[in-house]
Amino acid sequence: MGLEDTVQLRTEAGRTGLEALLASPREAVVALDFDGTLAPIVADPSRARAHPGVAGALRALAPRVGSVVVVTGRPAGLAVEYGGFEGIDGLVVLGHYGAERWEAGVLTAPPVHPGVAAARADLDGVLAAAGAPAGTWVEDKGRSLAVHTRRTEAPEQALELLRAPVAALAAEHGLVVEPGRLVLELRPPGVDKGAALRSFLGERDARTVLYAGDDLGDVAAFAAVEELRGDGLAGLLVCSGAVGDAPVKELADRADLVVEGPAGVAALLERLAAELGRSAGAP
Image 1 (cartoon, rainbow, N blue to C red):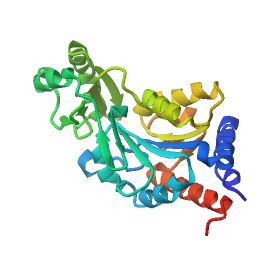
Image 2 (image 1 turned 90 degrees about the vertical axis):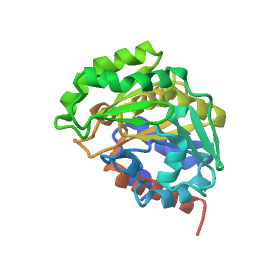
Image 3 (image 1 turned 180 degrees about the vertical axis):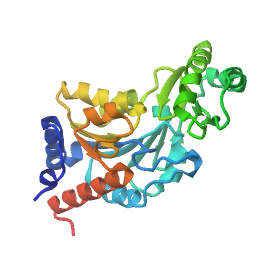
């Protein structure tokens, strides 16, 4: 049996997307989120590392498809380091939701939005005035600022407490707030994974895309694929998360396929590379 007969696709659109990818892999883009999709979520983001099977799977898959791209909110260089992506020919990393690009070992990026520096100077005071509980901490990504509540005693309540004051600070400095799992990220407007994915697909003239994600930041990419399907693009949407217990229900509900976290994503990529290798007659 082929891959399309063994994965538990939930929609006809997803089946069409997978069949198109297998039939014409050189016209396909495989696009992947990093945290929660390729790497398990951890309390300290600086300790995140890709699942052990990911780098090998991408190394096998990249030569068999048109493009493999990682689309992440992290700085592109960190995603490369934490993912073990150095030396994977053809792999592209779009960091900071597409504001940065790493390709063939070269990093390119525009100037940092001035509002980030202004918000950085004010953020600690805003959090203190809002009564941010112990355990709240700020991750400075250089081009954005992320307020995490995962380490607090009541993370969900802390997130709700800080949502309004963080949004007000962002608006004051011309930024927007992107919510995620127990995090509020202040970043420049007009930068999201949907826009980054659309742009990348356009430059590669792709006919098919597989996109895998796990969090609220991936909703824009899911929406982009759904819209592009209406223009004739074949798409397969994958949610990284346990079936029935996905981290973001909206993604799970919209996905064509739900897999068991980064281990499930790695296994899917390995199987896809193997299937394409057999089709091409590779040893």
